[in-house]
Every structure is written in C-alpha cells, then in structure tokens.
Length: 267
Image 1 (cartoon, rainbow, N blue to C red):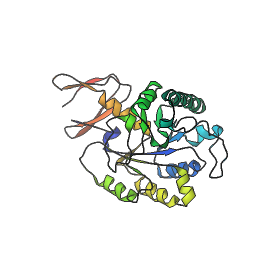
Image 2: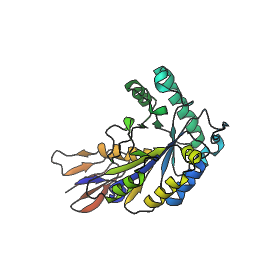
Image 3: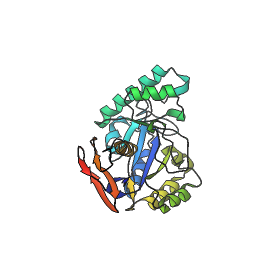
Image 4: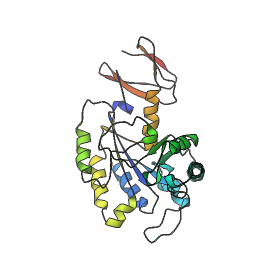
C-alpha cells in the first residue's frame, strides 16, 4: 500500500510568486490559460502603492485577481526578518494575515520569508501566528515533499537555466512515489527583463496533463499533512482517517480513497 495525491496521481506541480506587483495580472492570466495553479505572497502594506519599477496591485482587486489560486503572507512591509526583533516580525505576519483575510474572505495561513531570511525563532513566531507553511529561496533542483513545511525549499527559481530540463525530468519519473515540482519567483522579473516567454513556454509544456495534480502551496501542504495524520491498526489492516480531508492511496494495484472519519480495511 502507498499513498498518492488525489485520484491516484504521483506528481504535483505548484508555483509561488512574491510581492504583488501589477505584473501578477499577466502571470495569473498565463496560469489560468494553461490550467496551472500558484500561490501569491503579498505585503498588505504596499498594496495600491505606486512605484517607478512597477505599481503594486490594489486591495480592491486582490480577491478577484487571485481567484482560483492562493493568497498568502509576505509580512506587511517586506521587512528584513533578521534585522528586526522577533516580536516585530511576528506582529507583521499577524497583521498581514488579518489584512489579507479581510480582502479575500478566507483563511490566509501561508508565508514566504522576505528576502528568504529566517531563523528557528522566526519559524516559531510564524507558527504561533497560525502559519502552516513557509517557503525559502533555497533551490534544491529535486522533487521531494518537504520534511518540514516551515522550511519548504522549492525545486528552482523560474530563472534557473535548467527549468525546462527539470520539468522534463520530473515528468519522466515513474514509480518513485509522491513527488512535487515547486517553481518560485517574482512576476516583475519577467517584465523588467522582457522574459515572459520563459513562463509562457514552461506553463504551456507542463499544463493540461492528466498525470499531474495542479495545486496551490496550501493545498499541497494540507494534503500531505493529512496523509501524515492517517492511523493504522496494530496489524496494519485497518486505516482510520481522523482528518477533514479525503486521502487517496493505491493498494493491490487499485486506487482507493478514505473519507474524513472513515475506518476501512486495506490490503
């Protein structure tokens, strides 16, 4: 028996983009066109601000613009986490959550560390503010599910010269269990360097596939955490799902699932 992503899939693709510049509008359109999903980490304190290098999206458009994707935290002001008291970082995370939840009407429990900087104390503070996962900027070039979602290292930045090669490698894997490809960046990087073709080509190549689960960062985090919470009987023949999430698995060559609160025999 082995656990899988929904509907028996083994591979997931997710994206993560920071700062909330107006260039997110074009990026969301590209994602929607090719059926991929991403998470957008916003600084609530900069929403609606003007900047020579690119304005920030307005508070009024947040809910509609990112519909079907995920809005997550990036602190209120994009402060430098390691150059501030932990209490200030915690407050900026909490206030960012409050503001973004008011704009979206839903829970906001994801984070990406500003400048990719963090410490054990900052992780602890983020957890205390209700954060469930946080992305770093440490590219691994691999496809493993993270051991700790509060130190979630992505596969690569979209500017990685091997981006497409990594995508092809990822798609070629078979029978290695649950894997995830996680690409991150900033939409302004496409605009400033006129490199939209990078993400256009990648999304077109990776999108629309029946063997991939397209998910937000939070969807993947919640699903994997639900798998980790499953309980077996002592002899391994009964499986109990104590979570609020349906979990999928494969046993004896057949795909099956277990709904919330269910206890069922497994081969």
